Length: 367
Image 1 (spheres, rainbow, N blue to C red):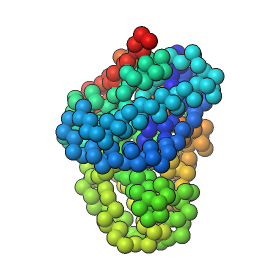
Image 2: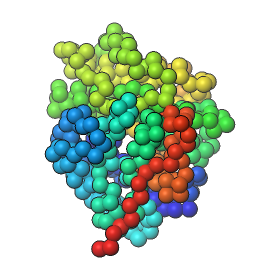
Image 3: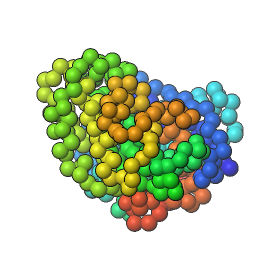
Image 4: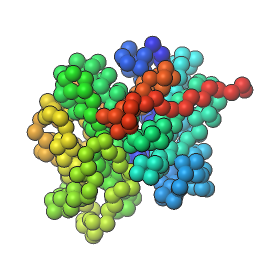
């Protein structure tokens, strides 16, 4: 067993999630402490500039000024988060490896292009711990979607919980994704549609707040079902998996001049309806849905999802998961697998032609 730190900075731009896990890349021996270190408003503004500039990139190594600035920031904030986490948890000197996702600024597998910013070598040098990073590139280069990466970890979590499949583990971050775990351990995974990103963008544009905290704004509005149906006419939803989605695939133009609360309610139902629509691609009806990610903390969104699904819907905590930590834990798990040369993506999760190892390992250079 190895002790790993997993790091995640998602498309919602909330902050750096840090989690500790002990694993051999197959079984989970320990799920340790986890923390989130929020981005400041100026940090988020820097990352938004990078997101706005990234669509012009034609090579994954392109670093126009906005991306270069954001990459330095991402690396700095992750190094600071690791240092704070090790001090707070008392694990300094007791971590074998770090799994570093970086910040996705562009994901377009149709062009064979995925860009996660963050300098893994610099992070290894600053933390003095080996770092596995750049985990999506090999999959995309081999013709895969490069996402989702966490299904093999979801399966390990389900096994640890003792849940009987089939079950769906859904993550509602900036983009939503689903992992189907069959009773025999069969995996199927794909991005389902928008998660929190559209809601967050709507709230920021209308109120200056980065989120609809606890779904309070949506709860005061009325969803416009005709607009929900309009969003779901996008060809993405009819595509058979494997499939993945860039945060910027959808925009807010269809909402026009809706009242702020009505727009928040409508977008919550778009997310719920997109997840419900994913069921048409599953090999059999699941017994339960388990929801991870920030979306599970939006009661309005969770109710909307429950209304649209035909089986129980529970937050991750209901079965002993830490829903805020799952993706960070996953990258610690994947780092151990990658360091052992084990595959981290599969034909049934990303569409890659064969099970694929991935990631780049950087060891600390002499000080």
